[in-house]
Length: 179
Image (cartoon, rainbow, N blue to C red; front, top):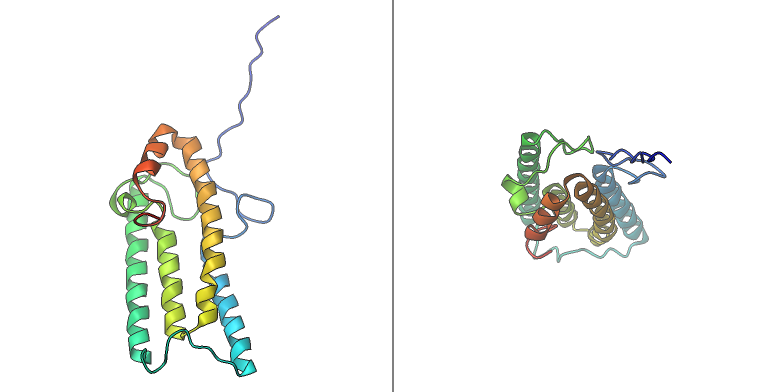
């Protein structure tokens, strides 16, 4: 009996996006969705007359909230730029394009997901600027969604890069610090 050749399924180099695929929507769309949902709920609460500010208005004036937002925005943009540069070095893009290399340098020495950290920082900055409890609470579903995306990305990276990725993942935190 001749030996049968087993055809292995080709390794996909990207996550598929859309209903019934790996992830439902791109993470930036999830960020905008969370902000819009929080704004909608905030509008309903405001319309009902029972406004609950996130921060005491007397303590956090518009100027201070604006400076906080501006700081979050600048750091988020810096994280994005540093992330894209590190991904460019390994010929991989930030937007679910085929993965061609493992980014381990630059900002990726501190966090395996600096772009998602930037999204969360931007979300918090907008919530504080808007002084919105509803928007800040919408960070929870956003974090849960991003975490699900991250787990799928990690599985793909582990499949593509094996021990190299596993060693990297064990030495660099998923978010920042101990998270």
